[in-house]
Amino acid sequence: MRVELLTVGDELLRGDTVNGNAGWLGRRLTEAGVQVVRGVVVPDETETIIKALQEALERADAVIVTGGLGGTVDDVTRDALARAAGVGLHRDPALEARLRDRAATRGVPLLESALRMADVPDGARLLPNPAGTAPGLRVTLPGGVAYAVPGVPHEMRAIVEESVLPELGGTPVPAHVLRTATVWESVVAGRLAPVEALPGVRVAYYPSAGEVRVRIEADAEEGLAEAAEMARKLLGGAVYAEEDVALDRVVHRLLAGRNATVAVAESLTGGLLGAELTGMPGSSATFLGGVVVYATPLKHLLLGVPADLLAAHGAVHPDVAAAMAAGVRERLGASYGLAVTGVAGPDPQDGQPVGTVHVAVADSGAHPRVKSVRLPVNGDGERARGPIRRMTVVHALDLLRRHLLTLESCERWSVTAGDGEEPG
Image (tube, rainbow, N blue to C red):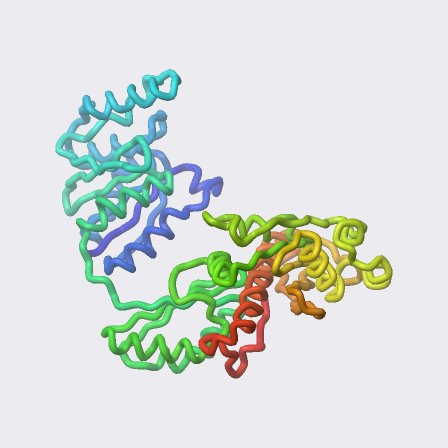
Protein backbone atom coordinates (compact mmCIF):
# COMPACT_ATOMS: atom_id res chain seq x y z
CA MET A 1 0.00 0.00 0.00
CA ARG A 2 1.40 3.37 -1.10
CA VAL A 3 0.08 6.43 0.72
CA GLU A 4 0.55 10.15 0.21
CA LEU A 5 0.03 12.69 2.98
CA LEU A 6 -1.85 15.90 2.21
CA THR A 7 -1.91 18.53 4.94
CA VAL A 8 -4.31 21.46 4.59
CA GLY A 9 -3.91 24.83 6.30
CA ASP A 10 -2.77 28.38 5.64
CA GLU A 11 -1.29 28.47 9.13
CA LEU A 12 1.14 25.68 8.18
CA LEU A 13 2.42 27.50 5.12
CA ARG A 14 2.84 30.73 7.08
CA GLY A 15 4.77 28.93 9.79
CA ASP A 16 2.26 29.83 12.51
CA THR A 17 1.77 26.12 13.24
CA VAL A 18 4.34 23.35 13.04
CA ASN A 19 3.22 20.40 10.91
CA GLY A 20 3.54 17.74 13.59
CA ASN A 21 0.69 15.69 12.11
CA ALA A 22 2.73 14.75 9.04
CA GLY A 23 5.63 13.64 11.23
CA TRP A 24 3.44 11.46 13.40
CA LEU A 25 1.65 9.96 10.40
CA GLY A 26 4.88 9.16 8.59
CA ARG A 27 6.29 7.43 11.62
CA ARG A 28 3.11 5.53 12.50
CA LEU A 29 2.41 4.41 8.95
CA THR A 30 5.98 3.20 8.51
CA GLU A 31 5.70 1.19 11.73
CA ALA A 32 2.52 -0.39 10.33
CA GLY A 33 4.25 -1.40 7.11
CA VAL A 34 2.55 1.22 4.92
CA GLN A 35 4.81 3.04 2.45
CA VAL A 36 4.60 6.83 2.55
CA VAL A 37 5.64 8.13 -0.87
CA ARG A 38 5.21 11.86 -0.45
CA GLY A 39 3.97 14.65 1.81
CA VAL A 40 2.39 17.87 0.56
CA VAL A 41 1.12 21.01 2.33
CA VAL A 42 -1.54 23.16 0.65
CA PRO A 43 -3.54 26.26 1.62
CA ASP A 44 -7.24 26.38 2.47
CA GLU A 45 -8.24 26.71 -1.17
CA THR A 46 -10.74 24.32 -2.75
CA GLU A 47 -9.19 24.24 -6.22
CA THR A 48 -5.68 23.67 -4.85
CA ILE A 49 -6.89 20.82 -2.63
CA ILE A 50 -8.69 19.17 -5.55
CA LYS A 51 -5.58 19.32 -7.73
CA ALA A 52 -3.42 17.95 -4.89
CA LEU A 53 -5.84 15.04 -4.40
CA GLN A 54 -5.75 14.18 -8.09
CA GLU A 55 -1.95 14.34 -8.26
CA ALA A 56 -1.58 12.28 -5.09
CA LEU A 57 -3.63 9.42 -6.49
CA GLU A 58 -1.49 9.35 -9.61
CA ARG A 59 1.43 8.31 -7.37
CA ALA A 60 -0.26 6.46 -4.50
CA ASP A 61 -3.10 4.07 -3.74
CA ALA A 62 -4.54 6.28 -1.02
CA VAL A 63 -4.18 9.79 0.37
CA ILE A 64 -4.62 10.84 3.97
CA VAL A 65 -5.84 14.43 4.27
CA THR A 66 -5.48 16.30 7.57
CA GLY A 67 -7.18 19.60 8.33
CA GLY A 68 -10.05 21.63 6.93
CA LEU A 69 -12.89 19.66 8.55
CA GLY A 70 -13.88 22.26 11.14
CA GLY A 71 -16.86 24.59 11.16
CA THR A 72 -15.39 27.84 9.82
CA VAL A 73 -15.66 29.30 6.35
CA ASP A 74 -12.06 28.39 5.51
CA ASP A 75 -12.65 24.70 6.28
CA VAL A 76 -13.17 23.56 2.69
CA THR A 77 -11.80 20.01 2.66
CA ARG A 78 -15.31 18.50 2.51
CA ASP A 79 -16.20 20.65 -0.50
CA ALA A 80 -12.97 19.70 -2.24
CA LEU A 81 -13.51 15.99 -1.62
CA ALA A 82 -17.07 16.15 -2.95
CA ARG A 83 -16.02 17.96 -6.10
CA ALA A 84 -13.05 15.64 -6.65
CA ALA A 85 -15.43 12.68 -6.38
CA GLY A 86 -18.00 14.33 -8.63
CA VAL A 87 -20.75 14.17 -6.02
CA GLY A 88 -22.77 16.57 -3.89
CA LEU A 89 -22.92 17.21 -0.16
CA HIS A 90 -25.74 16.29 2.18
CA ARG A 91 -26.33 17.14 5.81
CA ASP A 92 -26.28 14.08 8.04
CA PRO A 93 -29.20 14.29 10.52
CA ALA A 94 -27.42 12.26 13.22
CA LEU A 95 -24.32 14.45 13.04
CA GLU A 96 -26.42 17.61 13.17
CA ALA A 97 -28.28 16.32 16.24
CA ARG A 98 -25.00 15.48 17.91
CA LEU A 99 -23.67 18.98 17.29
CA ARG A 100 -26.82 20.58 18.69
CA ASP A 101 -26.83 18.33 21.76
CA ARG A 102 -23.17 19.07 22.41
CA ALA A 103 -23.75 22.81 22.27
CA ALA A 104 -26.82 22.58 24.52
CA THR A 105 -24.92 20.49 27.07
CA ARG A 106 -22.18 23.10 27.22
CA GLY A 107 -24.63 25.97 27.33
CA VAL A 108 -23.14 27.74 24.31
CA PRO A 109 -24.87 28.97 21.15
CA LEU A 110 -24.40 26.88 18.02
CA LEU A 111 -23.31 29.00 15.09
CA GLU A 112 -24.85 28.14 11.75
CA SER A 113 -21.36 27.77 10.27
CA ALA A 114 -20.57 25.02 12.80
CA LEU A 115 -23.24 22.85 11.21
CA ARG A 116 -20.89 22.49 8.25
CA MET A 117 -19.30 19.71 10.29
CA ALA A 118 -22.46 17.68 9.61
CA ASP A 119 -22.06 17.98 5.83
CA VAL A 120 -20.94 14.75 4.16
CA PRO A 121 -20.01 14.03 0.52
CA ASP A 122 -22.55 11.67 -1.05
CA GLY A 123 -21.35 8.10 -0.81
CA ALA A 124 -18.70 8.86 1.81
CA ARG A 125 -18.28 6.70 4.89
CA LEU A 126 -18.00 8.39 8.26
CA LEU A 127 -14.98 7.58 10.42
CA PRO A 128 -15.95 7.91 14.11
CA ASN A 129 -14.12 10.54 16.12
CA PRO A 130 -13.77 9.26 19.70
CA ALA A 131 -11.79 12.33 20.75
CA GLY A 132 -13.80 15.23 19.30
CA THR A 133 -16.71 16.51 17.24
CA ALA A 134 -15.97 16.37 13.52
CA PRO A 135 -15.83 12.80 12.14
CA GLY A 136 -13.35 11.65 9.58
CA LEU A 137 -14.40 10.77 6.05
CA ARG A 138 -13.57 7.96 3.65
CA VAL A 139 -14.24 9.03 0.07
CA THR A 140 -13.68 7.01 -3.09
CA LEU A 141 -12.03 9.11 -5.81
CA PRO A 142 -10.84 8.36 -9.32
CA GLY A 143 -7.57 6.49 -8.87
CA GLY A 144 -7.92 5.55 -5.21
CA VAL A 145 -9.36 6.47 -1.86
CA ALA A 146 -9.03 9.52 0.38
CA TYR A 147 -9.16 9.45 4.17
CA ALA A 148 -9.88 12.89 5.60
CA VAL A 149 -9.26 13.49 9.31
CA PRO A 150 -9.34 16.62 11.51
CA GLY A 151 -6.17 18.61 11.97
CA VAL A 152 -6.44 18.60 15.78
CA PRO A 153 -3.59 16.21 16.65
CA HIS A 154 -5.27 14.05 19.30
CA GLU A 155 -8.40 13.71 17.15
CA MET A 156 -6.36 12.87 14.05
CA ARG A 157 -4.41 10.20 15.90
CA ALA A 158 -7.51 8.59 17.39
CA ILE A 159 -9.26 8.29 14.01
CA VAL A 160 -6.16 7.01 12.22
CA GLU A 161 -5.50 4.37 14.88
CA GLU A 162 -9.09 3.13 15.07
CA SER A 163 -10.36 3.48 11.49
CA VAL A 164 -7.62 4.18 8.94
CA LEU A 165 -4.72 1.89 9.84
CA PRO A 166 -6.85 -1.27 10.13
CA GLU A 167 -8.14 -0.66 6.60
CA LEU A 168 -4.79 0.20 5.04
CA GLY A 169 -3.31 -3.03 6.31
CA GLY A 170 0.37 -3.35 5.62
CA THR A 171 2.94 -5.80 6.90
CA PRO A 172 4.95 -4.30 9.77
CA VAL A 173 8.68 -4.44 9.20
CA PRO A 174 10.54 -6.10 12.11
CA ALA A 175 12.09 -3.20 14.01
CA HIS A 176 13.77 -2.42 17.31
CA VAL A 177 14.05 1.03 18.90
CA LEU A 178 16.91 2.28 21.05
CA ARG A 179 16.84 5.71 22.68
CA THR A 180 20.05 7.44 23.69
CA ALA A 181 20.83 10.62 25.61
CA THR A 182 23.69 13.14 25.67
CA VAL A 183 25.64 11.56 22.81
CA TRP A 184 26.02 13.13 19.38
CA GLU A 185 24.19 11.56 16.44
CA SER A 186 27.51 11.19 14.63
CA VAL A 187 28.97 9.34 17.64
CA VAL A 188 25.98 7.01 17.80
CA ALA A 189 26.19 6.35 14.05
CA GLY A 190 29.93 5.74 14.28
CA ARG A 191 29.49 3.16 16.99
CA LEU A 192 26.75 1.40 15.04
CA ALA A 193 28.72 1.08 11.78
CA PRO A 194 29.12 -2.69 12.33
CA VAL A 195 25.35 -3.00 12.74
CA GLU A 196 24.71 -1.12 9.50
CA ALA A 197 27.06 -3.55 7.74
CA LEU A 198 24.93 -6.58 8.66
CA PRO A 199 23.06 -8.06 5.67
CA GLY A 200 19.37 -7.20 5.50
CA VAL A 201 19.64 -4.60 8.29
CA ARG A 202 18.80 -0.88 8.04
CA VAL A 203 19.47 1.73 10.72
CA ALA A 204 17.81 5.15 10.91
CA TYR A 205 18.70 8.00 13.27
CA TYR A 206 16.24 10.59 14.60
CA PRO A 207 18.08 13.28 16.60
CA SER A 208 16.46 15.85 18.87
CA ALA A 209 17.84 18.21 21.51
CA GLY A 210 20.29 16.08 23.47
CA GLU A 211 18.85 12.75 22.33
CA VAL A 212 19.00 10.32 19.42
CA ARG A 213 16.28 7.76 18.67
CA VAL A 214 17.67 4.79 16.74
CA ARG A 215 15.37 2.55 14.71
CA ILE A 216 16.80 -0.74 13.51
CA GLU A 217 14.93 -2.67 10.81
CA ALA A 218 15.69 -6.13 9.44
CA ASP A 219 14.30 -8.43 6.81
CA ALA A 220 13.87 -11.22 9.36
CA GLU A 221 13.30 -11.49 13.11
CA GLU A 222 16.51 -13.46 13.58
CA GLY A 223 18.56 -10.74 11.91
CA LEU A 224 16.83 -8.10 14.00
CA ALA A 225 17.66 -9.89 17.24
CA GLU A 226 21.33 -10.08 16.26
CA ALA A 227 21.43 -6.42 15.22
CA ALA A 228 19.68 -5.22 18.37
CA GLU A 229 22.02 -7.17 20.64
CA MET A 230 25.08 -5.83 18.82
CA ALA A 231 23.76 -2.25 18.99
CA ARG A 232 22.99 -2.60 22.68
CA LYS A 233 26.55 -3.66 23.42
CA LEU A 234 28.12 -1.01 21.22
CA LEU A 235 26.12 1.84 22.75
CA GLY A 236 26.32 0.64 26.34
CA GLY A 237 25.14 3.11 28.97
CA ALA A 238 24.20 5.71 26.37
CA VAL A 239 20.98 3.75 25.84
CA TYR A 240 18.29 4.77 28.28
CA ALA A 241 15.40 2.77 26.80
CA GLU A 242 14.65 0.07 24.25
CA GLU A 243 11.11 1.20 23.64
CA ASP A 244 9.44 4.46 22.72
CA VAL A 245 9.41 5.89 26.21
CA ALA A 246 10.66 9.32 27.23
CA LEU A 247 13.68 9.89 29.47
CA ASP A 248 11.61 11.46 32.25
CA ARG A 249 9.49 8.31 32.48
CA VAL A 250 12.60 6.16 32.71
CA VAL A 251 13.86 8.28 35.59
CA HIS A 252 10.44 8.11 37.24
CA ARG A 253 10.45 4.31 37.02
CA LEU A 254 13.93 4.07 38.50
CA LEU A 255 12.99 6.33 41.42
CA ALA A 256 9.71 4.54 42.00
CA GLY A 257 11.49 1.19 42.06
CA ARG A 258 13.57 2.45 44.98
CA ASN A 259 10.73 4.30 46.74
CA ALA A 260 12.94 7.35 46.25
CA THR A 261 12.16 11.00 45.57
CA VAL A 262 13.87 13.90 43.84
CA ALA A 263 13.85 17.67 44.25
CA VAL A 264 15.32 20.11 41.74
CA ALA A 265 17.17 23.42 41.89
CA GLU A 266 17.15 25.36 38.64
CA SER A 267 18.88 28.42 37.36
CA LEU A 268 19.08 28.74 33.56
CA THR A 269 16.17 26.32 32.90
CA GLY A 270 13.76 28.39 34.98
CA GLY A 271 11.42 25.53 35.87
CA LEU A 272 11.71 23.36 32.74
CA LEU A 273 13.34 20.51 34.64
CA GLY A 274 10.56 20.41 37.22
CA ALA A 275 7.96 20.57 34.46
CA GLU A 276 9.58 17.59 32.72
CA LEU A 277 9.52 15.52 35.90
CA THR A 278 5.83 16.27 36.52
CA GLY A 279 4.54 15.64 33.01
CA MET A 280 3.43 12.04 33.62
CA PRO A 281 0.62 10.61 35.72
CA GLY A 282 1.88 9.40 39.09
CA SER A 283 4.81 11.82 39.20
CA SER A 284 3.80 12.95 42.70
CA ALA A 285 5.15 9.65 43.99
CA THR A 286 8.70 10.57 43.02
CA PHE A 287 8.87 14.36 42.58
CA LEU A 288 8.71 16.50 45.72
CA GLY A 289 9.24 19.97 44.31
CA GLY A 290 11.70 22.49 43.02
CA VAL A 291 13.32 25.83 43.66
CA VAL A 292 13.97 28.26 40.81
CA VAL A 293 16.94 30.41 41.85
CA TYR A 294 17.50 32.48 38.74
CA ALA A 295 19.11 35.41 40.53
CA THR A 296 22.54 34.67 41.97
CA PRO A 297 21.79 35.92 45.55
CA LEU A 298 18.87 33.49 45.84
CA LYS A 299 21.23 30.55 45.44
CA HIS A 300 22.70 31.51 48.81
CA LEU A 301 19.47 32.71 50.43
CA LEU A 302 17.26 29.74 49.54
CA LEU A 303 19.71 26.88 48.99
CA GLY A 304 22.64 27.73 51.21
CA VAL A 305 25.25 27.97 48.47
CA PRO A 306 28.26 29.54 50.22
CA ALA A 307 28.40 33.28 49.64
CA ASP A 308 32.19 33.23 49.29
CA LEU A 309 31.90 30.58 46.56
CA LEU A 310 29.48 32.76 44.60
CA ALA A 311 31.67 35.82 45.16
CA ALA A 312 34.76 34.03 43.94
CA HIS A 313 33.38 32.19 40.91
CA GLY A 314 29.91 33.52 40.16
CA ALA A 315 26.84 31.35 39.59
CA VAL A 316 28.24 29.32 36.68
CA HIS A 317 30.60 26.92 38.39
CA PRO A 318 30.60 23.15 39.08
CA ASP A 319 30.92 23.68 42.83
CA VAL A 320 27.86 25.94 42.74
CA ALA A 321 25.87 23.22 40.96
CA ALA A 322 26.99 20.71 43.60
CA ALA A 323 25.99 23.02 46.45
CA MET A 324 22.62 23.70 44.82
CA ALA A 325 21.91 19.95 44.51
CA ALA A 326 22.87 19.28 48.11
CA GLY A 327 20.93 22.28 49.33
CA VAL A 328 17.66 21.46 47.60
CA ARG A 329 17.85 17.81 48.66
CA GLU A 330 18.31 18.79 52.30
CA ARG A 331 15.72 21.55 52.37
CA LEU A 332 12.98 19.60 50.60
CA GLY A 333 13.75 16.28 52.27
CA ALA A 334 14.27 14.34 49.04
CA SER A 335 16.30 11.22 48.41
CA TYR A 336 18.11 13.03 45.59
CA GLY A 337 18.77 16.63 44.70
CA LEU A 338 19.22 17.59 41.04
CA ALA A 339 20.58 20.99 40.05
CA VAL A 340 21.42 22.95 36.92
CA THR A 341 23.30 26.20 36.40
CA GLY A 342 24.85 27.67 33.29
CA VAL A 343 24.69 30.22 30.49
CA ALA A 344 21.84 29.96 27.99
CA GLY A 345 22.58 33.28 26.32
CA PRO A 346 22.41 35.47 24.48
CA ASP A 347 25.35 36.98 26.42
CA PRO A 348 28.19 35.41 28.44
CA GLN A 349 27.89 35.40 32.22
CA ASP A 350 30.50 35.45 34.97
CA GLY A 351 33.20 35.20 32.31
CA GLN A 352 31.70 31.98 30.93
CA PRO A 353 30.66 31.63 27.27
CA VAL A 354 27.17 30.77 26.12
CA GLY A 355 26.58 27.01 26.29
CA THR A 356 28.57 26.42 29.48
CA VAL A 357 26.43 24.21 31.71
CA HIS A 358 26.96 22.39 35.01
CA VAL A 359 24.51 19.78 36.31
CA ALA A 360 24.78 17.97 39.62
CA VAL A 361 23.04 15.23 41.56
CA ALA A 362 23.33 14.80 45.32
CA ASP A 363 22.26 11.96 47.59
CA SER A 364 22.94 11.45 51.28
CA GLY A 365 26.66 11.03 50.57
CA ALA A 366 29.20 13.73 51.17
CA HIS A 367 30.13 14.44 47.56
CA PRO A 368 27.55 15.29 44.86
CA ARG A 369 28.23 14.02 41.37
CA VAL A 370 28.81 16.85 38.90
CA LYS A 371 28.85 16.91 35.12
CA SER A 372 30.11 19.92 33.17
CA VAL A 373 29.45 20.29 29.44
CA ARG A 374 29.79 22.82 26.68
CA LEU A 375 26.57 22.66 24.71
CA PRO A 376 26.73 23.62 21.02
CA VAL A 377 25.80 27.15 20.06
CA ASN A 378 24.24 27.29 16.59
CA GLY A 379 23.76 30.82 15.32
CA ASP A 380 23.70 33.74 17.71
CA GLY A 381 23.15 33.33 21.43
CA GLU A 382 19.48 34.29 21.27
CA ARG A 383 18.58 31.50 18.83
CA ALA A 384 20.66 29.04 20.84
CA ARG A 385 18.91 29.85 24.10
CA GLY A 386 15.94 27.47 23.68
CA PRO A 387 17.99 24.44 22.54
CA ILE A 388 20.56 24.98 25.29
CA ARG A 389 17.85 25.01 27.96
CA ARG A 390 16.25 21.87 26.51
CA MET A 391 19.57 20.04 26.26
CA THR A 392 20.35 21.02 29.85
CA VAL A 393 17.18 19.26 30.99
CA VAL A 394 18.21 16.13 29.09
CA HIS A 395 21.72 16.18 30.59
CA ALA A 396 20.32 16.58 34.09
CA LEU A 397 17.82 13.74 33.75
CA ASP A 398 20.46 11.48 32.23
CA LEU A 399 22.90 12.28 35.02
CA LEU A 400 20.30 11.20 37.58
CA ARG A 401 19.55 8.07 35.53
CA ARG A 402 23.20 7.08 35.37
CA HIS A 403 23.62 7.81 39.07
CA LEU A 404 20.66 5.60 39.95
CA LEU A 405 21.86 2.78 37.73
CA THR A 406 25.37 2.98 39.15
CA LEU A 407 23.89 2.53 42.61
CA GLU A 408 22.02 -0.46 41.24
CA SER A 409 25.21 -1.85 39.62
CA CYS A 410 23.12 -3.02 36.69
CA GLU A 411 25.29 -4.98 34.26
CA ARG A 412 23.14 -4.05 31.28
CA TRP A 413 24.05 -0.39 31.62
CA SER A 414 27.78 -0.90 32.14
CA VAL A 415 30.00 1.66 30.47
CA THR A 416 31.64 0.50 27.24
CA ALA A 417 34.68 1.85 25.43
CA GLY A 418 34.14 5.44 24.42
CA ASP A 419 31.06 5.82 26.60
CA GLY A 420 32.61 8.72 28.44
CA GLU A 421 32.36 10.93 25.35
CA GLU A 422 29.26 12.92 26.08
CA PRO A 423 29.03 16.08 24.04
CA GLY A 424 25.81 18.08 23.81
